[in-house]
Image 1: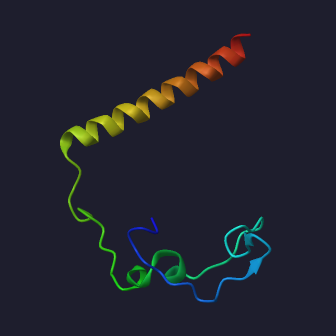
Image 2: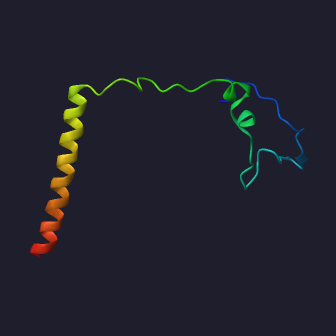
Image 3: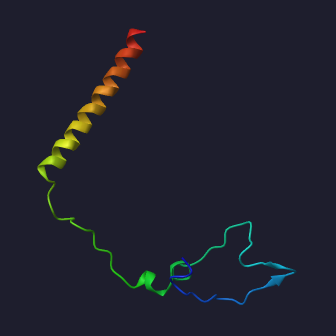
Length: 84
């Protein structure tokens, strides 16, 4: 990911012996969104795709069939629990 977006470090690197202390940490280092994802991370507005479109009839059918299958499985589990 660092090859795609060049993000300069906010602080100079600190070398401890032969180990780069800024990259070899055991604990996580908190960063802002801009530090983590670059300057373009906060500039856009998120717009959900197809948010205002109604469901296609086949999507409605699959949703209803999945709900019925889930209820059937729950009923089977309850019946098995009662029967044993």
